[in-house]
Length: 273
Image 1 (spheres, rainbow, N blue to C red):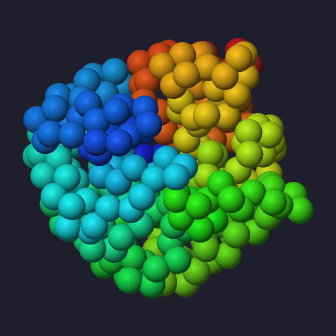
Image 2 (cartoon, rainbow, N blue to C red):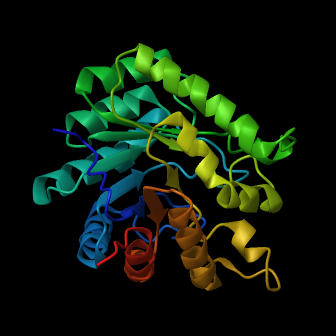
């Protein structure tokens, strides 16, 4: 049975669950295991199809955390969610040790912002029969915004993802999703280009995920809106992405985005009477 419940009739919602003290969007609100579990229940009640648990902030300029600290934050949350719900759980990490432990206690998806460039990570995913989300980013979150020159952002990102997909398939990983990395090593203009031309990634024959939720490129419009005022922009970006081929959207505001996407999907998949 496939790990990812990809549907040809609607866009899937991945709910973001950050268990970090320095998340740009949640500001450490769900750092304790119990607070995280309450939020997980809320996201599922609002309609999340997948939960994405992240225990290291990857906002621009952020510092990495030690592997054991990331494990201590993430693994108990993943295990408790898995024990209570049947919803697929994604672990947002580029460290194979974190992925290994979280897959062992209930996660079934690895969301790797590092582009699945670690051979040990690929081995771990294969051994657990997990799905892989392969994202594009240059460098590390600490310095990624220092490297934003592209000949053509869409072609360059697609070329990178094509190579990584081929590498993952060569290692026997069967379920693969690609993420062009909106907000990672991109200018605001490049992020909008990725959304505009998202359909060009369909050439890779894998489901596409986008994660525009509350990101700074949305705040670059209308007078530099703060994080808490980017809901409407997030909804718009998700709708554009879905219309241009996204199979999954990764968001903090599940209920609002889900309601908007119900209309988008009704248009996308409408059939003549």
